[in-house]
Amino acid sequence: MAERKTIIRMPHFACEVSSQGVAAARCEGKPRVIVATHSNALAAGVLTPNLNGQNVQNAQALSGAIEQALSSVGGRGQDVVAVLPDSAVRVTLLDFDSLPERRYEAEAAVRFRLRKSLPFDIDKAALSFDAQQTPKGLHVLTTIVLRSVLEEYENAFRNAGCSPGVVLPSSLAALGAMEGDIPSMLLKLSADTTSVAVVKDGKLLLFRSLEAAGATPTAERMADDIYPSLVYFQDNYGASVEELLVSGVSGLDGFAPTLKEQTGLRVKELIGSSVVSGDLRHDFAGALGALL
Image 1 (cartoon, helix red, strand yellow):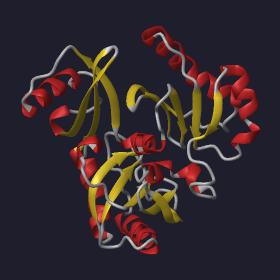
Image 2: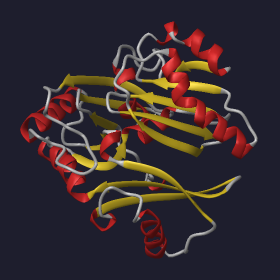
Image 3: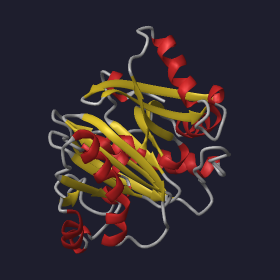
């Protein structure tokens, strides 16, 4: 997995894959502006994201969809940000007093901490980590994926004629759409997972991933999903989350008044229609956030 903060020059193309479909986007300018998008649906069973087993069930169909999406935005043959389903990658925040200065020693310490908390052998996994100093000490953001699973996705991109120069899970990629100056919470819903994150001053202070309930989203369900994280953040940082940014829900205006009443937060879309119109901004926030 690639560490986003250490990348000096991010590609201008991103492509996100999920069990429902594939979406590609292209950005230009400074600040970056999304100038082209394209999405394709995937047939049921082509991709079955999970942590432990085979993910890509029809490699030809997946590569074909990636190639078509990227070609439509001018990205075939280019370096791209490959955005993977959250349910294929384990993301966690670890607390450390300190880490060794040598990178390989720090990685060994992180792997040791993770060894008993994963449903697979950490020695068979690709690991990326980023340490950030926070008011509560040293937070280490880790992304872990089985190497065999990562190779499935990377091969699909290479067979589509492009280079997966940066690889990110969807929820972390979507954080690129958050400004983070004030305590802001992301609620990202997908078919497989629900992710909750809090960002302040550009730092990720809380991250949780939940199995999706599978039911139609409601304001009550969304409030239940975020309430424990709101309490935890306030108890541990002595500050309150001020706004809630929602991804994965179309027609948010119908939920916002009730959600605001139940949480006391300002509620808005993570990616508004001024950035990208249509449902792609709800269903593929990772591809868009990776470029913003």
